[in-house]
Every structure is written in C-alpha cells, then in structure tokens.
Length: 401
Image (cartoon, rainbow, N blue to C red; front, side, top):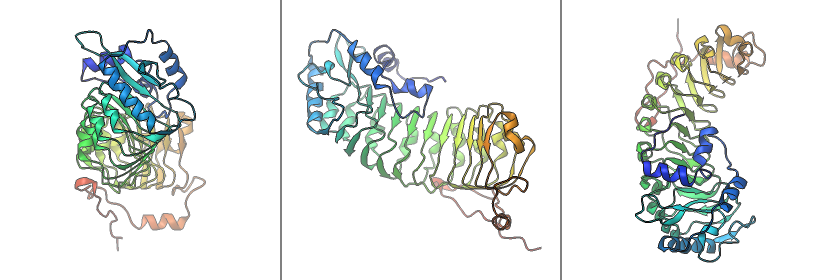
C-alpha cells in the first residue's frame, strides 16, 4: 500500500530516527493489531548511545516528564521507575533523535511509547512542553480523564495512539489542530457525544474510533475524508451511509461499521470504492438487497453483512470477486443464492449463510419470519439517505391485488 506523506521533513524524521517505534509501520502490515512489541522497542532504546548532554529542549522535556510522573498512581511494570534526573533520553519508553532541519545538531525527545504498561494516572498540561514529539503511543494502560488542550503544541506529532484506556469527555478536538497528524487511534475509551464534521476534512491516513460512546449521526461530509482505514465499530451513530461515500474511492481500503446502529439501504455508491479490501457492516439494521455494484470491487477480500435485515438474492457477481476470501451474510432474510453462491466452499471462500430464508439450506429462519419479511419488501430505489446521514422509512406498503 502506498502512502503519500505531506512533509518530507516529517518523513525523514520518522524513517531515519524512529523506524523501530512506529505503529504506523505495524499498521501497514496489520491494521487491526491492538499491540506493539515492547521488547523490540526496549531493545532499540538501549542501543541509543551515547546519551546527549541536556539542552533547552531536553530541559523542557524533563519538566514535562517529571510533572507526568507525579500524576502516575500505579505503574506495576515499573516503566517510570528510572524517570529520575535530567537525562531524559535514559528514561524507559522515551526516545530521542536529532531535531530535523535544525541549524546545529540538537537532540530532542521525538517519541514516547508506554504501550502495554498498565499504568494508571492522567495526562498533565505540561505534556504540551514536548513540542517535538512525532509519536505518542499510550495504548493498553489505565490513563483517565480529559485529553489536555496543550497537546496542540505538538506540531510534529504524526501518530497518536490513546487506545484501550479510560479517557472520557467529548471527542478530543485538540487532535484536529495538529498539522502533521496522520494516524489517530482513540478506540476502547469512553469518549461520547457527536463527531465534529471537521474530522473528515483532515489529512488522516487512518482513524480508529471504535468502542467508545459516540452517538452522533454520520456527518454529511463523511466522504471528504482522505483516510485509507475508517473503523467506527461499536458506537451509536443511528445513521444511514450517505452517497457521499463515493468520494472516498481514491483512498479507502477498509471500512468497519460493526454495531453502529446503521440503518437504511447500502448505497450503490459503495461499489465505487474500487480500492476497498474490507467492508464490515454487521450487527446493524441495514435493509434491502445487496447493491449489484459491489460485484465491481475487485480488491475486496472480506465482506461481512451478518445480523442485518438484508433481503432478496445473493448475487453471483459478488461471490465471483477474484480476491474474496470470506463472505458472511448470516442472520438476514435472503431468499436465494445465485450460482456459485450456493457453495462457496468449492471456491475456497469461507462463508456463513445460516439464519436466512434459503429454502434448501439448513439452519434457516422459521417460515413465519420469512413470510412476514416477504410481505414488506424494501424499495431502495426510492430511498434517499438524508443530510447528515439521517434515514427515512423504507418499507413499501403491502400490495393488494
């Protein structure tokens, strides 16, 4: 997968100075991994020598890190035990590198990685003194409270991973002020409320928001995002998927909307996402047929439509997609499988078609359920996903004669 970085300064900074730290490189290899190898990171840390003499930037870092240590209340793995004295480049989880484009060689704190530390505490305002950070990785800890606004000073921050903590409050708008940020991961926290529309106008490569308490509609400008990965699962958007999703065609490769209270029909515009490899809209209230346009997604590998209200025919064109390896459409109301869709195992494709209305297949719904669904056909041609992702009623009235 190719990524275009907007700043050669940041690219050089990352690749030459912090290659072993970067969760973005892990993201390229396995975007849904929740963990980074701390042993490799610590090995890299111990190879950084000799440690530089303090300078004004490292002194600011010392102030910030000591303030942070004072509000860490539990550190069972002793990550911060050696956070003592002014030589911050010795600290576990702290990574130093030359400041890019400086007129003289200046060492600064370029990365902090406390992943998997199980540390309890909060983030103090003094973290804003770490203005040269390119990477801040804090996943799988017990940090809580609000995200400080002083993070806005981190103009070089490229990756921010706050996942699997106990942060609260509204969406942390401070991240939208970071000009270099490309990787945003705030999943598995307790953020709540609406998503700011400006989130989708930023130059992010990946956005992970899943497993929070967001309750907003999907903004109407959703299609303005430049991200290749959007993971919004396990929130409550109570929305339909707007046709503007077609505008993501040149970048989007993974879209995960599991259990987001998504409703309405899948728009035909989904089929415009020619780079898409993963589409998962399972555990929602999506209705109507599978859009035939999906049969044009030649790169699609994973398609999960399970636990929805889809109906009609499973089209053979989808089952014949050249790179498809897993197709799950269980717990819907499909009444027919075309051609090879009846036995995808013969095509080497893992699939699940249980709990539908397929008359010749085992483990299907009761006839009463299927008859009730057939009496209320869904008209997706007359359906329009309104502004801001609001859906409208879909059921057509029963035909009388």
